[in-house]
Image (tube, rainbow, N blue to C red; front, side):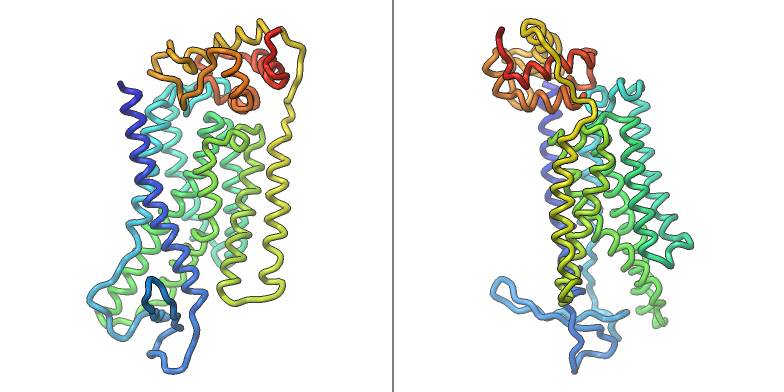
Length: 395
């Protein structure tokens, strides 16, 4: 009963998280496009940077952007903030409902670091808070005068954090936490910087004071960071069920490649929407193609891949000892009332049908058994992998 309740809570929270993320990312992409599409035309109001015409849903829209603000403030302003807040809040709730609730199986890998549930959860919360503190201080440091240098330092820091998470959490949780710290930085930008700075501008205008343009510049810089980090964080969040990403012993290298691919795609769209031509919009896709192929090839390479002679009887015994407790028509594990994802290993045909997943989850990574609760050894993983790659013969 508890398992079913947890699954429903996780599903509903995931649903809310996806809906919130669509709203946030959609508005972010729209405003990046809008900034790029602005045209300076004759007859614009004083202080206007440019305007943009668009058509949607059978109607025409005319948007004017002011460099600081219009001479007279409107009665109502639409603040695009709750999309970001709800994305982070639902994401953290999903972290709680999935990884904290089942910390022993999903957050902790005692072969990586032997800790209890409380320590693992505390470590998870700490890295989320520390990621924001580090990023915020980086953006406020003397390096802020050189935005490209800030991005380079941030890139190195995220990759280093990814490596560090592999030394603390399970492989799956380590990959997720890399995405989570990026998402925390992005929402922190909105909550602590972009919205407060914009409110200062509005308050100055209402009071008749000359607003300081620097507040808008700072908010724009953080918004640009969010723009370049959006695509990588999306992939890290949706790839949680693809072990070829997080299970690699050098998953941090793959994180670096994903960051480069995501940034290159955004650079293309930003420049293309700004109307740039030639080399400015020609180098991104070849780089993305090469990096994507490299990502796939790198994921196939494993420094510890082994193939050994095996006894089918011994291999089947390994499956019975470490897999059947959960993946059976009648699970004996207290963790599940029915086989997870409907995957069963009660006979050879079922095992053969899911052999590739078994190799990915239990041979190329230690994701299964959950939290290695059955103490499956590396030798057993190698034997089972060799048997499965050979087609799981019966004799």
